[in-house]
Amino acid sequence: MKNPKISLSVVTVLSALTAGLYGQENNQSVDSDQLFSGIEVGFGATSVYMHNLHNGLSTSSNRGDLTGSYDLELTFSLPELLNVEGEIFLHGEGGWGNPDEGPDESSIGSMLGANADYIGSRSLDIVELFYQADLTDSFSLTVGKIDFTGFFDASAYANDEASQFLNGSLVNNPSIPFPDYSLGVIGGLTLTDELFVQAGIADAQADGRETGFSTAFGGEDYYFYIAEAQYSLANELPSAFTLGLWHDGQPKAAAGVADPSRSDVGMYFNIDQKLINESQDAQQGLAVFFRYGVNDRKKNDIHNFVSGGFHYQGLLPGRDADTCGIGYANARLTDYVADAYPAAHEGVCEAFYNCCVNDFVAVTPAIQYITNPGGGTDASSALAGCLRMQVSF
Image: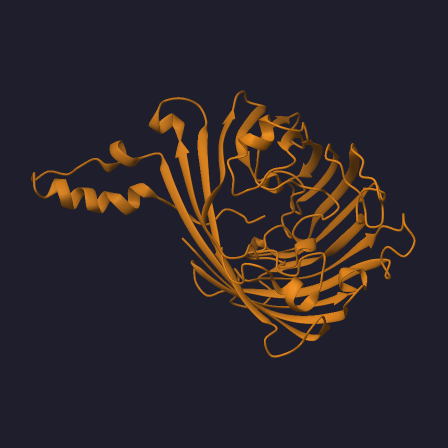
């Protein structure tokens, strides 16, 4: 899940044009807020070079992969535009790189996703379009085409492949079968200042490049349900504890299981905890994160998962906006059928340093060590070097 890019109001972009086209000609100023207020636009592009340095499937000279993605986001504030509650969010996404295979398929062989930003070569698709509103002081509603990873299984320190960890297992919990960008609805309820609960339902068969109506309302009734509760403390050292449950209605089977079956269920648990604040700036300092997930080993290749690590902002003097982290993830693979996977698990250790060149550009070197990629079937443990650049406006 990518965190929202830096947003710039369309007013600031177009007001000068408006004044130039109308204000000077008529010798009077134009109130651009009345014309464009309430619309915000954001743009971000991420480019990733990843090279397998050791073992995996291949370390030949052509096993380096240059891929990338770009995002265009529009937010329409309905109180300002139409004098009604809520906002509409629109997100377009495209990408470049090998359309058929990313670094996992071509050189590493990981099932966890060494490059979570990789989406292949795609033109700009509308992947999210939803309405969101606070219907009461405590209840919020989101409905439309949604990225459910942007609402559930969240972490302040391991949730954004554009600025934090790049490996997919350190972005979201792979034991949760999140659907692609999908039609769905999410309701959230604030019970106390510390306790927030939410639940959602999504089209389990969604293809993010499609509208989703054919799978959500036609054919099989395969839906993904999820609910979670989060207890957070906004004190000097903020913390968040999340417990979630999910149900997937699709027929599925783990490796080696002959007959797929429905009604897959699982649970997950997350912790974010700030450990140290730097005295001059509470945003800086050391934090720790933890994730755990479990599901039915008859229906899922990854049936047990754990990850954790450390995150630091402002580690180096004079580099207050820079962030760095080191994390470890371990995906326990199904043993429901003997010898389904030669190795019992796939693991990854990743370290990164996100250097903010300025307010718009960040460059991130990272390194990953992946043990038993693909469950040890075709590849031995791999060492991959990464260089990421993100531009956001």
